[in-house]
Image (cartoon, rainbow, N blue to C red; front, side, top):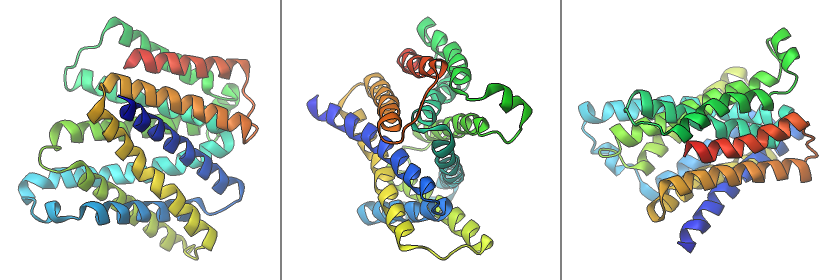
Length: 287
């Protein structure tokens, strides 16, 4: 039990560390896309070196092509959402961005209800309703957002959608394909696809000259990016899933909020503080 809680804390800490490093990249005007590309290359190398791709090479094509296709789609979602996350952390603050990501838990919850027919309790339906209230409270400059289609507040909406789609894709993998393709191999496909997308965009833009600090920062992001998933899996193997998911999400929101206030000088309005508190309540209700 103690080991399970250790993995939960490490998972949440890794998520908060990623937010901090992306904030560093944005504040120092580093090229975010190059940092993210190095990040996914790092995660891919670590995943391959620890697991290899033997299982993929032996995979029956007719059976495994859908799992590989899903991994490719998830890779595209991951790097796009990571880029949005980086910009949101810079413009909207760490705590608010982390909260917007965590309440996206509603998307896979609704997927399991509508597609896999897993029924929600009354408490969870209350959480579903609170998600929309919470997201509205977290949005900065709401009136400006409606007047300006490129307002930074929309980054929180895109972050909510992107994270929800990513988590839902992993839910689909778990239910449909985990029996034919291991988690490590699936994540290897996801990270490798994200790396290729990032590399392609960097080359097309002609902005491929990496700075040493961008390489180091990309490696620093890539390690916790990979191990966030590993720590979560380890915790799930030792403890009840409801306890693990709720604890990780709550600790990440609290950690991100404290990091933003103490390290980066984030200032939240009373309404946004209400949104942070509701985020924690909502997560606990949904799980």
